[in-house]
Image 1 (cartoon, rainbow, N blue to C red):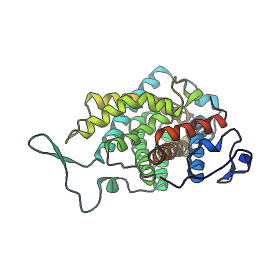
Image 2: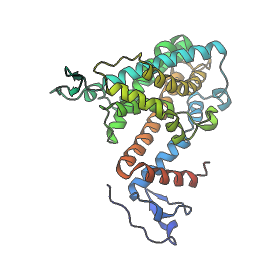
Image 3: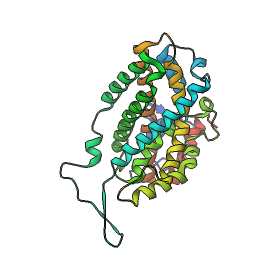
Image 4: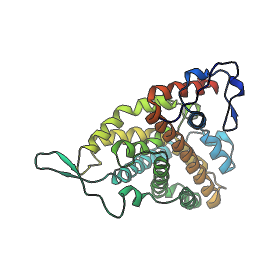
Length: 318
């Protein structure tokens, strides 16, 4: 467990500074078991997860009023977005499951680990690009979308989603996540459902932990299925249910991106800017999500949840 900070008393709370910020006086330091560095990291995570502001980012990137980004799309466009989003999520799941080590089955059905590839892990070979490269490639795909419009969505969105997944996996690895386990791999896909929040989406479950709870059952079933098969069938019911839940939430923010890219005067340059903002958003969410998961492994889920709720309350978020 990381070194815990020993903070005594409450009279000097306002004088405690973490990473250039003052600890809100509403937080009782005696209830916190996190080190100062980890508490600062958690605070940044809370802000990223509870106040993401994707619509504002897309509005700024597109140079369009915020109400245009949040406007409902025509029904045919909405249907096309939903279909393409589901396809993109199935592709993302396929990529995520490809990082899992292959397993061999013994005659009695018991599984044994497969031999390790001497050239390195499957994850390392598949996810070895930098965040900058991911953004550059996302900008290129966004430029294509901006230049040719909705007609390219079926190609551009799966490509952008795969690029984002690569970047998410890199961030997860940096935070100590084991991507070669079913849970770790699926946690990367889960990020796509965490990028939509509160008033921007109208979803019933809008808080970070509420969304995780809503996804918990299907994610656990998908992880158990993926972990128990030598060859994973992506059309298996457990995986389809998980993919459908992720796609339902991801589709909302995809609609906002499509609305931004559909502005007639946007063009290729604006499309690239929108896709870069989209990538930035999910990189921020991924960094925050895997920070929380890292802290949960170090301190326990109950401690991190209590500290998270205190930080959230200090920001004035219900």
